[in-house]
Image (cartoon, rainbow, N blue to C red; front, side, top):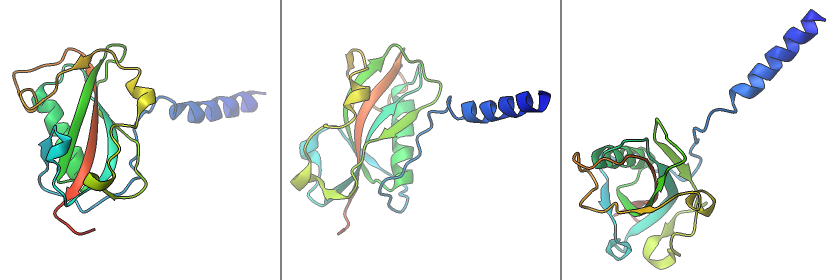
Length: 166
């Protein structure tokens, strides 16, 4: 009987150990890592030779500065091979106080020319609708060490690869 209980507890522990993890594994399109990535907040500013390859929502850690957010987003983009990031709207996440940044990806399954095929911010609605108030996150706050956000933020973004014929 004790062996059965021990086996049951061991199996239960193994099964539950994965439940608390929300680390997203990126399985999308990837390019060679870049050393820099530019940022834009305007869709019309995307050059004609840019291809979109990742739609994502960034969940920021609590009490992040504009600098913390910019650095984390740019490092993630560079790791995936993006040399341009289109940053969209941001919302507060009052119910969630994250201690680390999290990136949740929503496709696409293929690379596409941004200016010819972009259909708008039509991804991640399930998570986006859980957010609270919209937050201004533009060039005046992006990268600023003086701006701090009291809550975690949910930020829409697109990673792009520009200057290459794909």
